[in-house]
Amino acid sequence: MGEKYLDEVFLEKKKEYELLEYLKEKKNYDEKLYEYIRAGSADIGGREVKFHYERFFNSLSLAIPDELKSNDIDENNKIFSSEIKDLNLILTRIESTPKELTLKEYKEGLAEKMKKYAGLPLKWVEEGVKIKDKYKITYVSFLNPVDDIKSYNFIFYLVIESSTIMVNFNCMGDRINEWDSVGKGIMECLEVFSDEREKE
Image: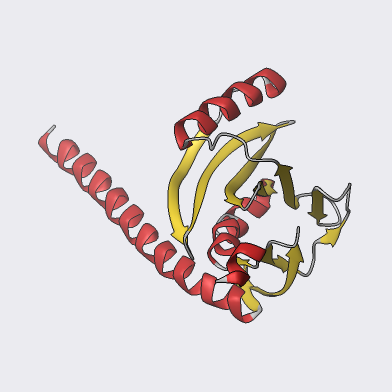
């Protein structure tokens, strides 16, 4: 019994060590990934992925993976998708100055909406608030099932002048393991070009 117990303890410690090593490597990779995206080219899943910058809503500039093709809906909604729609970047501008949502309010509203339409709860992965060039960016990521396939979403939003701009980067199925850090990389590399900023 003693030997079996020691084996179990060893296996648990090994798993814990492997997880810590994986998280450490992932953090290092993520930090380098932001630099590569900013420079215009990154190794994702063993292949070179090119990025280019586009300006949106006369307010901000984002790095877009070249493989995503534009499908504009209207002046306030922009969608970029891969050929089979397993990788998407969606931008939405809400004009006027709404009450700024707290992270807690946003998560609660999002969870309620997703449960209503998908019928299943979300699995939260990460959340936070960061300041970039005086602008507050709120972000959250989660996993949810879509027709028996898992979908990973990284969403961030910020208020620029009289508009709230929301960005949703999502990937599905096998893409998740390779692309889950890219949404955060896109957020890290954004640039604001508002009239308010240019007057300073």
